[in-house]
Length: 250
Image (tube, rainbow, N blue to C red):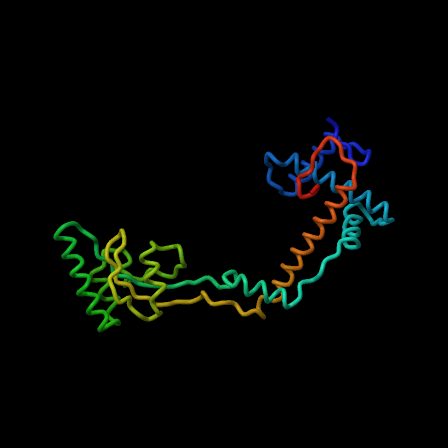
């Protein structure tokens, strides 16, 4: 069945040309590409018809549509109060990523008596290190079963989600420069952990994000206003042979 928009037919050739244009612009191919092309053609036709009705004309169709939307779509720039409210309600989105650097000494779990001996040895080393933290690297080279032991136990820098949960919880609850006061048991064994660096996780100041936040919120309002404007054009149009999605027709 043909698609007719305000008495003008959208042909298969038009649709294929729009698909080709989208692919050339780098849009991914997919099962919904034909629908996207049809919707684009319908909306473009409605906007050009409206521009003609209002006597709006520019150098080409894209410029004409741009002028139409600039003229007809009304929205309010987000003010500081709106930005502060969004900032307060979404504080987690404005935190810098939390990072840490740590070293560890790993003792294998073992089985039976070997497990008990391994844990006892780890507890003894931990007790010594809590008294003399500066000996950590030497103890790691002597006792750790992890390859990092050769480097004094250093694991480098990492963020949340990169280590097993028990290890991560211990690291991010220990201050930089300190040794976790308890052995940490994971699937890999018993760990003595020394946190060497902690950073991030701090809330970015409002003034640092104010301009970007204002642009973001204003863009959302502009998109909503444009959507409402297009919905009005769709409701006033005569379209046959294709049903646009509900948000255009409600």
